Image 1 (tube, rainbow, N blue to C red):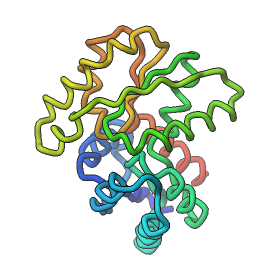
Image 2 (image 1 turned 90 degrees about the vertical axis):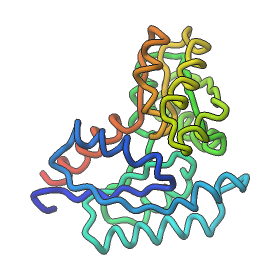
Image 3 (image 1 turned 120 degrees about the vertical axis):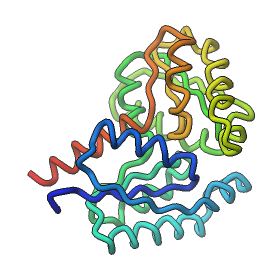
Length: 223
């Protein structure tokens, strides 16, 4: 591994890019980040009930390119492609981290009733399956309740982050009785402060947790 680790970020939507860059700046500024974007992936995923083999092959192609340019680790920032990311992790010679893995583990450790605010409905099924897998691995008894915030992602894609944040925060009190709330996607993390003002429970975001987890994986591998 080089003195400055190269982390390749695989994006399926441009709205995930700014939050993860902010997380790296705050939590791991020593890392060199490289962005690979196929924003047709999220559009195609929204039109299909399941992840197709063609979508998976596109992820694998991005991963092979990441390997060719010397990636020390790969972080996928879109939460709607769990099975494709698993295939990628099997093929890559370096650590590959799912976008929500670290956040799920942190939330599960915080209590039994976990709420999640999502804005991209096609991601919910795969995220729920991943959450249940992590619960089983840890012998925890946590359960997940998810709310999909209508129109928020469309507002964000149109450039109105303030409206996105307000819509997400407005639904947060419905989960106020939970032990923790997760903001489902990297893009949703923009609403973290607004959500924290709306509820008095721990609020977890994916980018910060993912960056810390990947940093530990890479530094451990280099020792």
